[in-house]
Amino acid sequence: MLGDGKSVVLSFDDGPAPLSALESILETLRLNEIKAEFYVLGSEVEQYPDAARMIVREGHSIQNHSWSHADLARAPAQNVRLELKDTQAVIVDATGVIPTKVRPPYGGGGFRGHIDPELAEVAEELSLTIVTWDIDTEDWKTPQGLGAEKISMIESQFTQQSRKLLFNVLMHVQRGTARGLSSFIAQLREWGFEIVDPENS
Image (cartoon, rainbow, N blue to C red):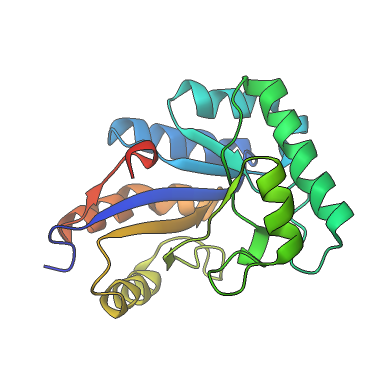
């Protein structure tokens, strides 16, 4: 089986808005007894601090995804610093939690072998580990969500990385993903993957 002896961590970018999608995602995770990672935007946490608190209250990991979804690989060091520092501050202010990871928007400057020096410098200053993902669900592409056409593409991404034992699966806080999350979780389990807590991965 595809996932025999292998694990996945579920992660969601671009939250905490839209709130209806977030609430639905959190409910699905709760029903399936899964803890996930949420890489949130500082500007949205500022607007919806309660939503950020909800993520933490449900026992999920809340992390830094920049302030405005800027491409950090193209930004000067000063902008990178503001994007990450302000996001750290607003998350701490809203939730009391200090993020330990940053996932740069678009993965810009974050992939091994292509680490952006300014990003690396600022991440180190803020004690942030730069992370990306292993499986891109492309849930944001039309048709939005995790439907059948996405499932076969996701399956082939797993197949292409057959030696890997732990995968970070990238999704987004959006309505289409919220709708399809329950059946996607069922599919991962059917393939034989164990869905693990990000804190233990």
